[in-house]
Length: 417
Image 1 (cartoon, rainbow, N blue to C red):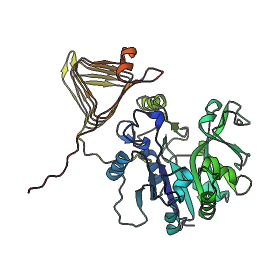
Image 2: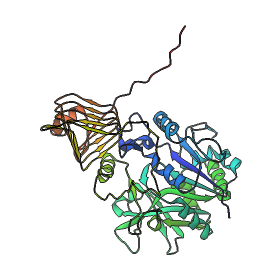
Image 3: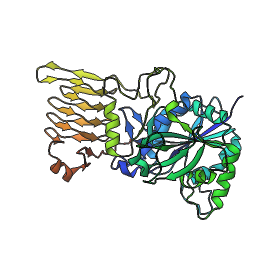
Image 4: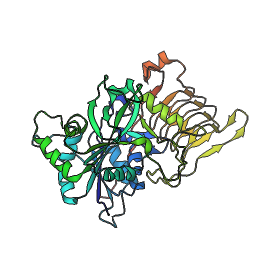
């Protein structure tokens, strides 16, 4: 059977826990792993799974996200059913407001579903770092003759307050929902974990349309899938949980575990980036059968210059992206973005440097995240005196220093008059 699939990516979150990295950008547009953006992961999963019709629902601080989608995800337009299109709030609700919840975001674009007339609609978030063969989840949905399917993964019970928690029967049928409840029931076979919703859904179109219209008329609803629509379907519709642990990525050895990370805090974001530099990272960026897609930057290769004692450009246990120049500086255990310049005598340890950072001569930086376009003056020390750093920068409780970026210069057109 040829299944018509329409995808929506919810990319409108504020990402307040990632501040100040989200001060000037939407959370899905935050850089990750040197050359990627967080949203690249869900879009890669869709395209690699053979799903080419995607609307990206945007809202807060969306300019950087729009630029990235333009640079990396515009399809050729040769086929009308191949597209990745950003969609702002359409103000189609009676109150003519911004999106007020995940269900309202889809409802405000319900005309797109009715026009496309798909068999199933998939609704995925853009806030997490993960690899997923979405085709397998859709196949599970069809095999179970489900009307709605929710991707789920075990997480420590201490994190129940951060997630929608699912109660499921042995066959995967959902028998209960507990939205961000610290006392949510644990998994019967694992009392230290709860079964968390990943915020990724597959809906049969007829059920989704019916529920969206009903929810829009409900004045007591928060218009959210996790709080309102899904709990209301328990016992009324064929509702199943898809166990993400069963998901397999083409090209990965059978021993590789499915990868999913919540990078909602600075500390979690830092640790997920730091994993990439290890010899065998949990997140495999080098699987040619499942390439991670992003914008096609026209950068020169990375370059390491000078071979003089005390002035040798080096990087050890690090990721270094294109266009970067290590001119006599030393980098260890770090993730270096595009177009970074590290000058003579400088030292960068356990850091994440976003695009176009410039580290001056003899500067020393450790356990820090430097946002895009940061210029570090010669001789500066960051990460060595946290009390002093707190006066100038954002510092987490675990001592990670975040240095805010600067807006890059934007060239404007000139005309002869």
